Amino acid sequence: MTDELDLVFEKFTNLLNVRFSGHIFTKEDAIRYTFFYAICQSNNLNPEDIILESKHPNIKGDKEIDMLIPEKDDSHELVFEFKYDVKRSSVSPRPYKAGHLFADIFRLFLYKREHQDSRCFLIYVTDFEQANYLSKEENRLDDFFNLLAGQKLQINSDYVKNHADTFVKAASTYGIHECQISSCLNVDLTNSHFLRIYEIF
Image (cartoon, rainbow, N blue to C red; front, side):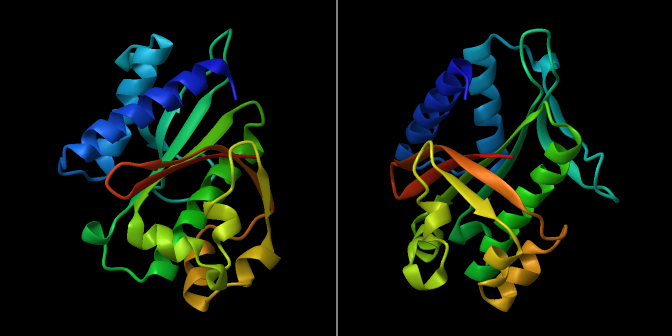
């Protein structure tokens, strides 16, 4: 991870703490636009340097990429997917929500596979309920959710299928693929929120 992204992630974390400490109503768009602000401020980008909701070139249909920053002479293309899981915003079962988190990982992998020079990141914010589910040993996702910064985890068919049927079905939305994730950031935020950032290879 570059020093520039270190600064972005640090600023993003601070901004989220301010937001959550103020009990400000938050949906996924607010998470995305907070990150938009952080990366513009930290990397001296302008709004026109960032593409939002562009079509995913490697998935049929109308699937989109949340945020894309095109390649420049001195930097790789950057691709970001965002997920905000809180009890208020969804009544879906926790295994289903966890499975869709892995579907997002595979969406990013499908992009990365065809764009090897790009860097692809999943930015995940959740609350205590989902964090508690992901951390329980019996749910076999603790190695993912509590992966420490700098550590890597291999994801493959055996890993995915070692979970509840509801999880497997949701995770298989774009197929199950062998890939590796690296934890870029693992922090607990204020007011029982949690931030995890992974890079997909």
